[in-house]
Image 1 (cartoon, rainbow, N blue to C red):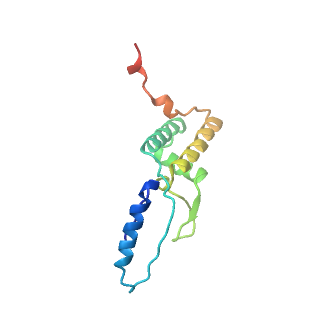
Image 2 (image 1 turned 30 degrees about the vertical axis):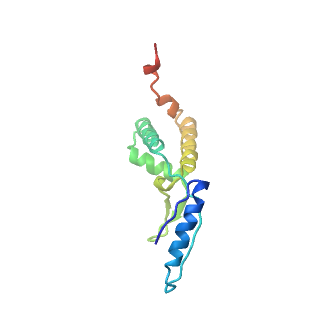
Image 3 (image 1 turned 90 degrees about the horizontal axis):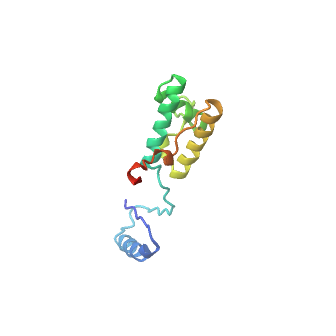
Length: 135
């Protein structure tokens, strides 16, 4: 199986050339399936780091550990699927979220923490150290 990635419009010609070459080598013995889909960007490392910082801050506030906070936030704000084993709801993993989905998830947590814990969670801007730019 070969996966073709197209990141710019200029790459269309090369992709077509590669695809035609591969199809020319196809023996016809087994059927082919071609799929075109938009690639979604996975959550960023910075999003993930900030998220786990938030879990730690909420854990400190509530007396829970950060893994329990992570699980609770997932149950409250992530879409669920049914377990194949016992058909119980299981929150999807944050590792499968796109950058947009992770942002939306974190916005829900931030609003919840403000409303129910009276906490202001740090934003990425709060974490920037501007001291190196001071005169």
